Length: 257
Image 1 (cartoon, rainbow, N blue to C red):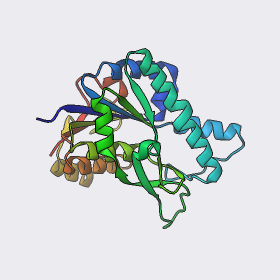
Image 2 (image 1 turned 120 degrees about the horizontal axis):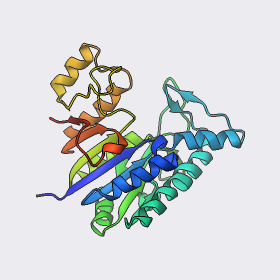
Image 3 (image 1 turned 90 degrees about the horizontal axis):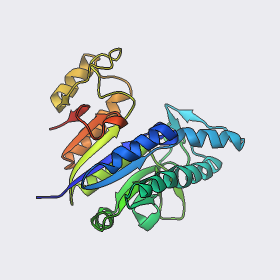
């Protein structure tokens, strides 16, 4: 039997505001067993960039990361946001350690090739060093992972936090019984976007296909669920989509085979 590990991914909005961050730190601290936290931080990066006179450019909700923007996201994600979380967890007795992909070469990426859009210094994950991560975790260290990787050639790369969470969960599934939890602003995947209580409790691949065909699941939720099924196919036990405030409770949408 593999030991259980819970990997939580939270967006920047949760970790950038004091009240929601404090709630998250308490809830995350209470999770039993091995755990990993992956966080975003986009709003803080946009705010600091503006203060420095650097314009933030987005295409389809994704940040164009030029050389100046890369400096900002490295400071904000790997520094300000990450260390705030680590310090908060240490205060709650959790032996957290902040990591970017460059630290101990834990996540190596390649710079995204230019197709229709040049995203700049954005990384597509190539390899997660799960053996090294699992050794850390078994020593009682709780990794707190920023949305930054590196190319092995000396350059940091801005990398989508959902992707980091998914790829890390897949890699760790070799060593642990992994539950991956994606936190976002709703209680789960909704059957009616205007009814916050219309949470679909379980989605299988067949049901997913049917919901997409009927237009019940659409927009940005489609890639989120595709990522979830990809994680399940790669050995992750289950994926839960829920609110950050529910990571310890029942509820949310469970993605299963």
